Length: 294
Image (tube, rainbow, N blue to C red; front, side, top):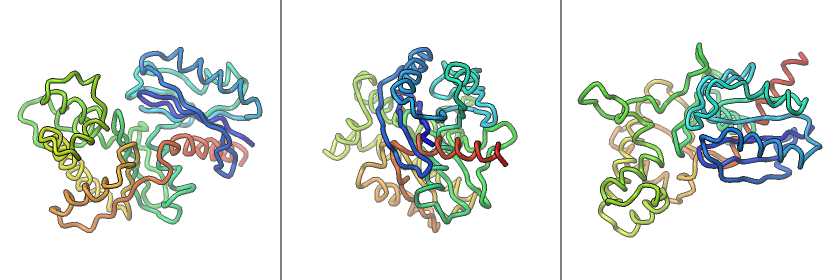
C-alpha cells in the first residue's frame, strides 16, 4: 500500500508518496498562502492525480483536529481551514480513505515509528517554525486531551505578564521564527517581511549586537518553556523539530541556557526534519486502517 502524504504548513505544502515501511518514494513541495484554502486543496488533488498508485490520503496540518473524523475546529497558523471537514472533503473528491492529524502529533508519531523514540514510553515533541507546536507521549500513549487540544505548549508563559494581555509572554510569541523576525525588525527598523530567521542567525554569528540580543532572548524563553515542560511531564527526552535544528550549534546554544536551571533534562533534535509531518501522517493513517479492520 502506498499513501499520499501531505504536510500543510504556514508557508509551504509538502507532498509525498510513502509505503507501509515508511520509505518516501516521491516528494515535492510548494509555497502556499495560509489564507488560500482552495489553492492548497487544488495542489493536493493535483498530486493525487500525478500519483494514481496511492490507495489512501494522510494529512498533517496545524490546529485543533479530531483525528477520528478529520474535522479541523481551528486551523492554527492556517486559519482558512477553521471549521472544515478535510477528511470528508478529500474522500468525496477522490473516493479514497483519508485521515487528518495535528502536525506536532505527526512529528511525534514519526519519531516513535521510525526515529530515536522507538523504545521510549515518555517523551515530548516541540516543533518550532512559523508557529510553535507540541505533543506529549506519556506512559506509552499519545495524549490528546478531552477536546484534542493537549500539547498546546505555545500557550505556556515564559515571563510574567504586567497586564491582562498574556499573549506576548507565551512560548508562541517568544519562541518561534515569526517572533525572532519581528523582534529583530522592531529593533533594527527593517520591515519584518524582508527578514528571515536565517538572516537573524547569520547576523548573530557575525556579531551584530541587535541580533545577539534577539537570539539570546529567544533561547532564554525557550529554555524557560522547556524547564516548565520537564517539570510537568518528567520526559525521558524532549525532541525539537523545525528548520532551526539544522543549525549545528543549536543544541549547544540551547543547553547553555538550560544549565542555569540545574536539572537533568535530555534534549535532542527530531530525526526526520521536514519529512516528519508526512511520515507521522502516514503512520496515523496506517494505524487508523488497522483499527477499522480489527
